[in-house]
Image 1: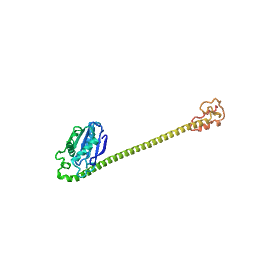
Image 2: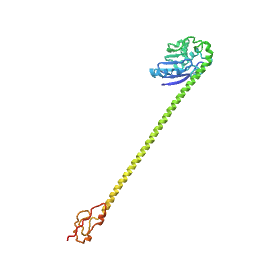
Image 3: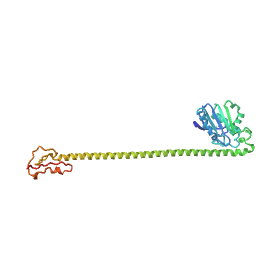
Image 4: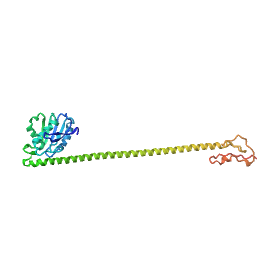
Length: 298
């Protein structure tokens, strides 16, 4: 409901009446809904919700109120719960809440009797302010002869009991509505907390996964760096080892250089006991190249 408001007015004999409004105060028409005996404003909840939706939120203002001794209004003093007094209460609501604009009235049961009593007392209000009326499940017979329009013999008991019963019923319904609203609010809060918990858990899991992935990447990078260092170190060691090898054999009778190329040094005819050359070269496991010996010519 839009523009909902709850306020109160005080009747001519000092009774506080609960009044509820829905819609803008400057709407072109006001619908006044008046409930029946032992009911309350909640009897019109469908009309309160649907009229602005059907006619337009700014096209209508809906006003409801609780009779004395009903709903949220004050209890009625003994002897005051009469149709004549209810008609006076209606005039108070019209003057203090509804305003001077056109009014469409709907009265159920005792609410219809209230309007008919008002028509007898204030006919000047009809046609000028109250433009239309709907009477629902009501009666025009003996409306002014007893409380609630019931037979006179039941009036004393009704005056004493009915306001209390209506107040108790209205209080219980209000408390039930408040409990339902509280339960709905608590369920909404629980859902919000649960959603926040799930979001936090997901964020923590994502953070841990990102940290684990970063550590794994860093470990791979370190391993790759170490492997590259070992490759480079091995190459440097190989270069250093090759640099210590002799470039050429100077031993007599060796006709080749250590690199496998033939030497330009003239061959010597020394004895065969000096025929071996470069023993260090031949013992290296990584090279199979050796110096070639030439036997002396006979």
